[in-house]
Image (cartoon, rainbow, N blue to C red):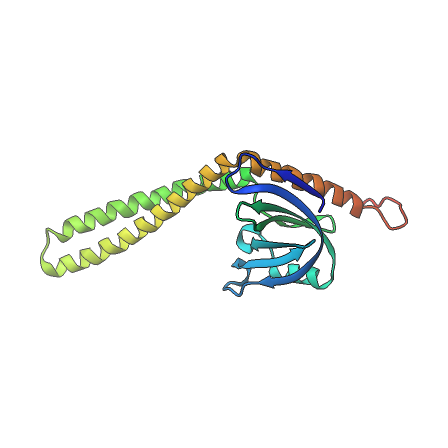
Length: 209
């Protein structure tokens, strides 16, 4: 283990850990598409879990690194329930696994919010109009307006779920901002060290690319 940083004000994790070693017992959940599942492996005696879709990770690349018995460094959260969740992984001076930064995640969420609200408003308005018309037209037309209203209501419901998810994501970024920023700082520090070490040739001469 390279480093352990205790966390006192986070309800999600107890500590940030930096581990170094080879990936052992690599497993990936079978999903469709394949890069949206969960991975599990052991690093330096610690079992680590990670979700590929949030980590922008390629399961095949990770398996190749595990098969090569290559040395890696990983930043993980030690969660309150005792498990460890992967946040980033460095191999040969490059971060091949890394979550979006807090700033990038916040900006992306704000960019998507107007579109979500537009679908929520339009879907709700159309659904309300269709159901209103359904109550004031002959039976034959009422069925058609009812179906249209149900479809519009489904769009509005989906947009509402997306909107609530975005609000939750923004709240999580705000509530855990210090911890998320700390993890990014730790990754940047080890990435710089790893890059500097990878730039030195075996005979001790610096290599400039």
